[in-house]
Image: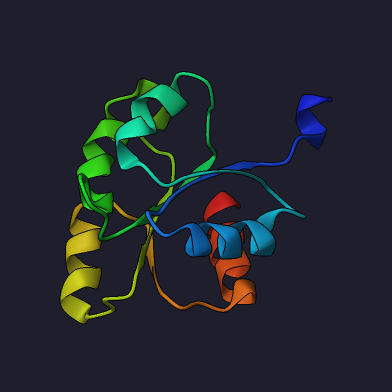
Length: 125
């Protein structure tokens, strides 16, 4: 496949398989979705995949989405890669702390598929 024709890669980490299924259903026509439920697998995945954008669940066992941000930013190739946090805890405090961690957007779950596509498209422009 020619590089100009490739679908952008969205890497999604969420401990809820149903959330990952919803993300894949919403995005598969426009994006290549790499999804997994174990945040501890991130480093292994980043050895094989170069995402154009990260979707991280805020609250997961073992590591939160915020815990994964320094791991992602530790890779030279991902210092500027957009990160969107998904959360069921949509308080303004969470939004402000997410921005402080270098997150470019926050989406409250449950989300509308069209909203997810629009927010991702905005970050990848």
